[in-house]
Image (cartoon, rainbow, N blue to C red; front, side):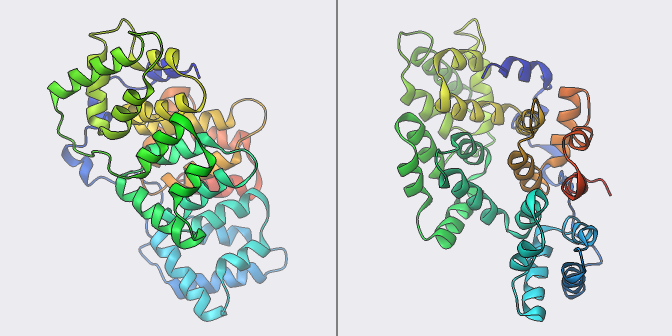
Amino acid sequence: MAFFQRFLDKITKDDSTKGNKGGSAETAYFGTVKADPNFNAQDDAAKLKKAIETKGVDEATIVEVLAKRSNAQRQQIKAAYQQSAGKSLADDLKKALKSYFEEVVLALLMTQPEYDAFEMKRAMKNFGTNEALLSEILGTRSNKEITAMKNSFKEVYGKMLEEDIKSETSGHLETALLALCKATRSEDQNIDDGLAKSDAKALFEAGEHRVGTVCSVLIDILTSKSEAQLCKIFKYYGQYSKQNFAKALEGELHGSLEDCLMTLVKSAWNKPAFFAEKLHLAMKGLGTDTHTLTRIIVSRSEIDLLKIIHEYKRMYGKTLQEDILKETSGDYEKILLTLCGNS
């Protein structure tokens, strides 16, 4: 994975996106999906029932209803549908729809913790574990989000998320993922300057300053410090090394552990840019990684998708929507564009 320098070159160099959440950003909303002010759960449930029962299925109505309601409103629609139709909305839509469009619709019907748990389970379900996906979710969620996901995982799958991680991963990667899974990472926005300097020195001495990397030191610092604190550590790292920390990390590690720790580095530096890069890679080259496309757009649609769209344009010189139009088609394309804020 040698694109961190390009990542750094493409994102902003100011501090406004690096753990700095002061000012009006506390109350600003950066999602693309907003609650419908004229919402009526019973009406929406009736519209969906009619759309499902229409010959050939009325996909346009399904997009119009589900992609233009908040997640909280979709949960009310599910309850209203169950009450009026006596059946599960998700089950009925699963029978009526197919392919990538079905995947987006079913994702929209889950709560965020349920969807994260579903994706974590899918990453460990089939032959060969999708370690990058485990790192993406655990490396970008808040403690509260991880705790909610763990509770949902236990409720839906009847076992602890940590048990699955232990059975599907090993070594330093397992250590890093389980550390993140504890949901005890600092989220303090106040920066300890002295500690940042000593941690930067510890990272240098555990990595490029010696033969053989002390992975435990890297894992401990990167999985426990707040994103704001990590950014300060990365700045101080330059006092000990001729290269930035991410470049040093690329030289010291490889494979799934590098990917996991690099997720923490990139996410701390600029989370929307991290997701913009993931979306770009999902559509780059031959074939489109629809799972990644769906997961990021759905899961970030009420969090920071506006910021991701902004970073995408700045990093790649074209809009996310342009690439979606180029790489997808049909109802799948329409629902993704609607979730991106295109009416």
